[in-house]
Amino acid sequence: RREGPFGDHTGYYSLADDYPVFHVTAMSHRPDPVYPATIVGRPPMEDAYLGKATERLFLPLLQLVQPDIVDMDLPIEGVFHDCAVISIRKSYPGQARKIMNAVWGMGQMMFTKFVVVVDEHVDVHDYSEVTWRVFNNVDPRRDCVVVDGPLDVLDHSSPLARYGAKMGIDATKTWPEEGHGREWPEELAMDPAVKARVDARWRELGLPFG
Image 1 (cartoon, rainbow, N blue to C red):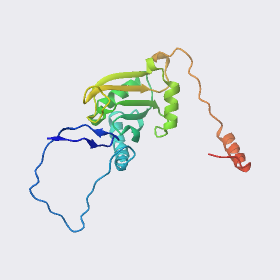
Image 2 (cartoon, rainbow, N blue to C red; image 1 turned 180 degrees about the horizontal axis):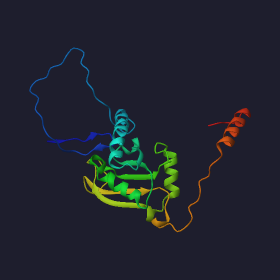
Image 3 (cartoon, rainbow, N blue to C red; image 1 turned 60 degrees about the vertical axis):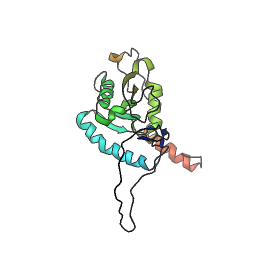
Image 4 (tube, helix red, strand yellow; image 1 turned 90 degrees about the vertical axis):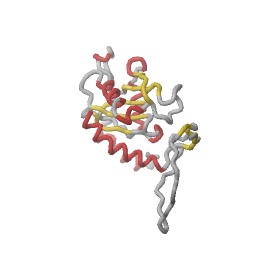
């Protein structure tokens, strides 16, 4: 029977569609019943924290199949099936692409619309660092992969329901074997002892901090 539209966890109204019908024959309840439910809507809502817990539960299972995966973050803003940020121990050229395809081949992960792969020392939960890596490390022609495949039924952006494009972004350090003919620059890094001294003096001088 036709139902909807309903407000969904994506923050948009899902389109009306045909859903199974069930017939209620009786209802009973206990005194002071507890009705477990979550309120969904534009993230973050209550279900977001269930999603973050699921992320932590799924990571060890992912690592069983792909041991080179170090960590994973499913951004709340990506409603968990639209984006995954994954760090890897890179040891050979093309490894990031292998991880992208592996993710798209794993159960519900097949719905992931964007897969971003970074090096193992990158904190995947620090979105400022992740975006810095993407904006500075990625050459769009060389490091972006676009494929077609199944999408979540709630994804309204694709021309067809449940099927469309996905993008993989390789934000790891690019190797010469991957088509980078120039020297890769070193990252700016301050000596920890010097940084600690500057931080201490900063507070002593009463300057704004943090």
